[in-house]
Length: 232
Image 1 (cartoon, rainbow, N blue to C red):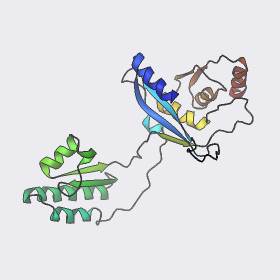
Image 2: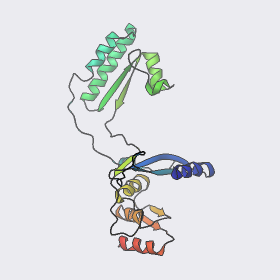
Image 3: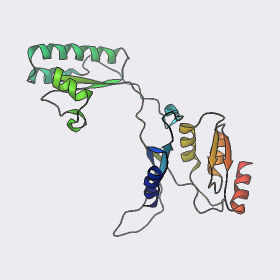
Image 4: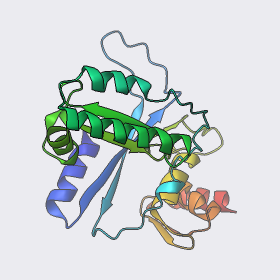
């Protein structure tokens, strides 16, 4: 639990806050034949910030173009049945049907990629019933429509195989792709990346390949030499 103890202490004792706990999921963890425990296959990366104006390029992080799909007039038709069978008042049903027609047309026109409808008495409240805009709409109007833009949801997970290190004399090498995801997300072109424990230089290498400047520091002269060789 040392990484999490560190994260808690960092926020308790320093003027920083935790933006995300990003989990690296190892698709090929070291095989273990445990009979009474599970194989460890994740490691955390903590994104701390000092102020709310930190650099953030969300679109550079694990982005995949959404798959195109054909939308027909039947899209959302099941919601009409739910509106008819609900206990909404006549004016509420009329407004719900109008809003549903608009959402279907926006989907057909490509203005939104999809939508969900929640109807009072038919569906559970959003977010477990917590107070908020969605639930206020459901309570006051009888329904709410959640529209989706089509951009892929960015989750706090990076999945990657463990790096091959047979040619690099260092015991703990992160995959280059994992570090490149974080450098792309959190720094601008020509920005400076500092790694005060640079080891075999993977962070510096990621920065160099992505057009950032870099500073690497390590106590081991041996590891500094490995880093320089990799950066050539």
